[in-house]
Length: 76
Image (cartoon, rainbow, N blue to C red; front, side, top):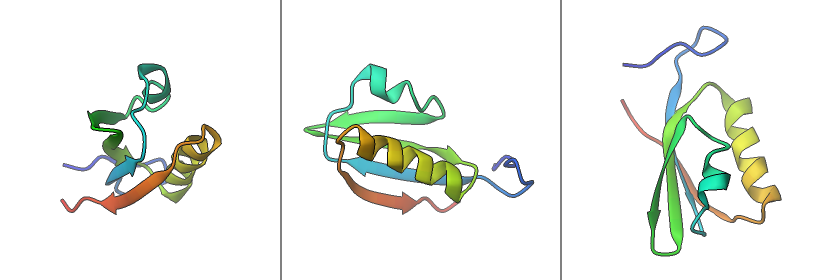
């Protein structure tokens, strides 16, 4: 079940794969995304309210020197 975002629209479940093993300190910046670490990569999965929130996550990762490999919308 999807919950409503700030603008009343449905939140979108996303998977963000990065080319790094993210620290607990870094993943704590995104409490709504669940980290799962694989060999030298991390996936963050969770709901985002809108494009602005997604871009904020991506911009923060970039500012920390983390390369984003893939961003995927997960179907309901």
